[in-house]
Length: 129
Image (cartoon, rainbow, N blue to C red; front, top):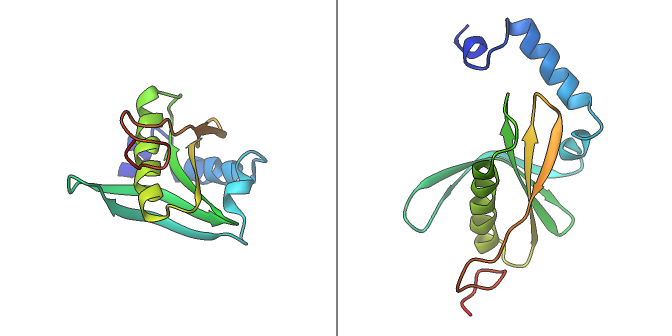
């Protein structure tokens, strides 16, 4: 199938095995706690009118986790920048909540936290200095 070629898997069985192993991994399980409210594929519009699609928003006890999945890739700075932008957008919608950003690498079963650095001319919650 087209998806198998796109993600470089031998076939649907390999995709299924990879995803099941991923979901069972102790580093990944906290992102799939059934007690949390979750929104997948959340669309948000930025200040310039660009549509951003966040892979997963997790609402957990006073914090919101912004999750972006990556396949077959190692960490790249632009991955973190993408999550940071999503975090800034979510902070504007939920200014009282703690916002965490996470890059989840499916193939390597790694979860890497993204840190939201203050923007120039703004403080850490998006207000002007």
